[in-house]
Length: 110
Length: 240
Image 1 (cartoon, rainbow over the protein chains, first blue to last red):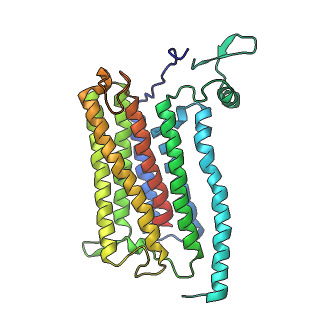
Image 2 (cartoon, rainbow over the protein chains, first blue to last red):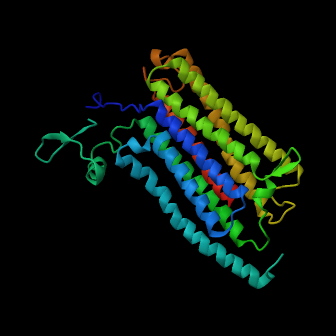
Image 3 (cartoon, rainbow over the protein chains, first blue to last red):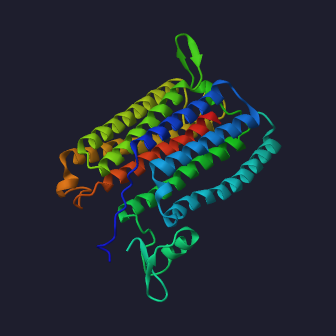
């Protein structure tokens, strides 16, 4: 049975890669322009995150061929990093608390 | 076999997809990753572990930045370059981003030509990828030199919170190390492709199985990951 194990080659038209490449350029330019035009506040953060997630998604899905892998692999690899967000939330509370204690004991400024 | 499954009555049927497919693939007494070779699966698992390391670096950076009372330096100004008498914000980092994305593009095409067994194009595209990677590292060396001469140290900097220095050197340094290792391996694998080691099955480092260009794809997974990490560093460290 093992010998019959068919290797699945990831062959896609070159055009697909060129299109993704172009999109990565466009998205990077967009995130650079966010900084160049000095956008601020929630607009800045949400744009940065949107462009970041779109770029990461394109790289993983097309360049790393995750879109064509079986779900067993995709979930095994993609779910654990998503759980890191729980860690992020925990450290967010921790860091806010540290800042609060520092301001209480050392004052607001340096 | 990859594409079939045995039902409870002992008959062979097509392998289920979706959630049923996940349950079937992860069921006992078989390989979980059906159409993925061990080499590829292990590279994915290595990259997962690397994700946690980079994740922890970015997390500690977040914690340091939130918890300091001292203002964080403005990366837009810190990484600005004076070109033609005009201060352009973050321009060096933007160019580095484009260079790395381009290297990812050439690598993806190298993988494709590898499976088409076009040795010449594969090797050339891989060397082009390596050259772009080396350019990136070179620009990073320039960036480090500039910041060090301006007085940035792991324990301080002229513009504010001391933690900025340690985060900068740690995160970009670890990423730069990954790029450097990638460039070295790209050159090694490109040489093997050029010489035809994957066709002849010539004994050696990473060439044990005859006629398999999958090593190019595994190399590609690593390289795209390096680009992927930069996407997050660009967003969280330079733009945030």
